Amino acid sequence: MDGKPVRRFVGMNDSVSWDVVRSEGTKIAVKFERNGSVGTVWVEPYRAETRGWRRKSVRQLLIYPAETPIIDKVEPNTPAAAAGLRSGDIIRGFDQTPIYNPIALLEYISKHPKDRLVLHVERDGARFDVPVKPTLLPTQGEMKPRIGIQWDTTGIMSISHPNPIEQVYNSVTSTLKTIGAVASPKSDVKLQHLSGPVGIGRIYYLLFQSERGWQLALWFSVILNVNLAILNMLPIPVLDGGHILLAVIESVRRKPVNMHVLEVVQTSCAVLIIGYMLYVTFFDVQDLP
Image (cartoon, rainbow, N blue to C red):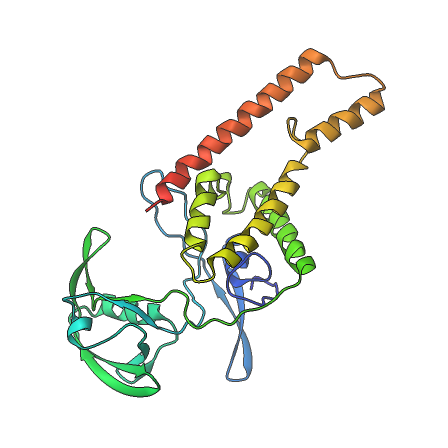
């Protein structure tokens, strides 16, 4: 992706999503393998429109990883409920077309809101067909064509066990990549895309909704603490890195920094940091449900 090898779809290290967000050219080179053959296409990234004072959107290619389409919940009094669909059903396709991500079905319904379709369903190892026709249902304050199912966002997962050194290394490289992206004038990643206390709290809340909430929370805490340690070492007054920088300057000059200058610099930096925290909190609050 963009001339860099990738190992996963999402994440900060060697991932499709990050290399797309971090790209700076007008088009992105996407190298892919299909039926044993390797090819390359150049794709112009897409940016979604944002309303009001929300965070500006970043680059996307609108491609998604394969994800088992499992029904998490069937809404009552909807076409899906009338058709007999249940929680745990797997949608393998529709109208003789296999699907590898729930988004494929959602996009089809959005483009063909009046068409009846036949879902290919798997339940307890048995496969059968279910005819269903979309209808207008309330969705985030709007009426949109749907069949009335909510997807299991976890899908079928396998657990990996990276060692502590690998986790810390990944966290360090992620932080450095983020700093580099924010510092680049051509990058879509800006200061507004970082999170403050409210955003971090929201992440913990979402993690604890998972079946493995405590494990995910511990994993995220490791990443968070490593990130904070690196940020704390930046050469900014009032941070530890700033104190080290001032100590080096005093060592080179062989005399202490003027106290008045030191007070002005530290107070100014403290005001800037507090102001920035309020700035990102403004965007974090808008992300709350």
